[in-house]
Structure formats: C-alpha cells, structure tokens
Length: 271
Ligand code: GLP
Image 1: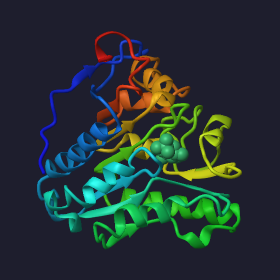
Image 2: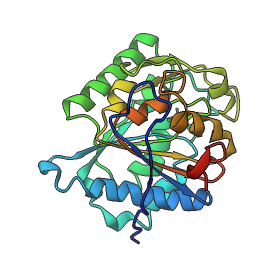
Image 3: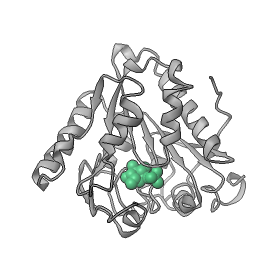
C-alpha cells in the first residue's frame, strides 16, 4: 500500500542561537495508528529516493522502544513489497548495558521486529554476549560498531524515537553534538520511563556526531508524555539540554508525531 506524504510544515528553529542549516518537515497525525502508518510510508519513500545507491547497500540505523513498534510491523506486512529490503544494512542505535532479565535487549527487539520479518542478511547488532561483560568490552563494541558504520559510508537513514527528556538514541541531555559512541549513564527520567522491573542504569549509544550526519532522519513520537520533549526539540533552543533539538541543524529530518505528542507546540504547528 502506498501513502504519499502530505506537505510538511517547515520548522526553522526560530529560537536557535544560529540560523539553521536545514529545516524539518513536521507532520502531526491524529493518533498512534496514523502516525505509524505515515512513519512506515516515510521510511519507504526516504529509502526509495536514494535510487540504486550507487550499487551499495543503504545503511539504516534503527531505534528500539515502544514508539516504532507499529511502524516496524507495517514495514514487515503492508509495506513489505514496497522496497527491496535486501538492499539495506541494519545497524542498531543503542542498547542497555545492565538490563535485568525483565527487559528485552534492543538487539533482541530488532531481531524480532525487523531482522526476521524483513529477512535481512546484513545485520549489525551489538552481540548479546556483551551482557554481563565489563565496561571495556562494551566500550570496544560500541566503538567498533560505529567505526564499521562510518567505514561503510555513514548513515543513510536514521529512524528515531525521542526520550521524555529529549534524548536521541541514549544521548542524554548534556551530550555534545560531537559525541561518539560510548557508555552513558541513564538519567532519572529515562530510567523512570523503562518498565517493568528495576530499570537499567547505563546504556551504550551511537554518538550524536554520527547520528546527526545521517543523510536522512525520521523522528517519531506519540503520547502526551513526549509533548514537552517535542516542544523543546522543535521550538526550544538548539542546545545540549535537548539532544533532539540538534536535528534542526543536522540531517534532513522528517518529524512524524501524533496530536498528543504535539500538545505543547505553539501556534500553527499544533493541529
Ligand atoms: C529509548 C531509546 C531510544 C528511543 C527512546 C524512546 O530508551 N534509548 O532509542 O527512541 O528511548 O523510547 P520509547 O519509544 O519506548 O518511548
């Protein structure tokens, strides 16, 4: 099933200290289902515009979490025939370092939601054997992961959610836009949003420098708990206080959110 993206509203970063190099396209959909449908269409149309990619595979970085679940379902079902998925290389965006058994690892989530349903063969996940290993192993693994991504030409498409505090991947507030892959301490609000069971305290993430250099990015958000982060990301200052705000001066980004997540936007962008 094909969906044509409606014209986006341009967001120019009015409150940024410097004029933005790019603009965002923002789409506000009525609810989670509509956001997911447009999100899946946006993934397909974004990949399609790379053409044959010069014969190379397209590097797609996938986030995990609740927000993209239905997007990934749609890609694997209704949108499965809309793209030759053998042409993409999947890269994981982030992972819990010290998850308890109560939490599904992001690598397992991506295997279940994306790798298996789309029959992907070029897959770059952080190995499950890392669980229980020391910091050196985790640091080496995320650095190697990011290096491999850069050696292959960097990110063509990044599919983002957003944290309640505006984090991107696990790049928490305070992360510099030049940051690289590393172990991070999870903030209180990030930990509070993780359920069930005792939340992990740390994660690893591809760094902002690599994420923001993506040729295309799609950011998804649903629900009122994300409204403050979306308002800060789209209308607040571009700063390390809200890492997602850096998308306003980074790659070409399409923001697809539902009305609840748009609830704290001002003016004409709020539908
Ligand atoms: C998670 C991940 C992000 C994700 C964000 C939103 O913890 N670190 O990659 O985009 O936080 O997650 P959710 O969609 O579950 O709200």
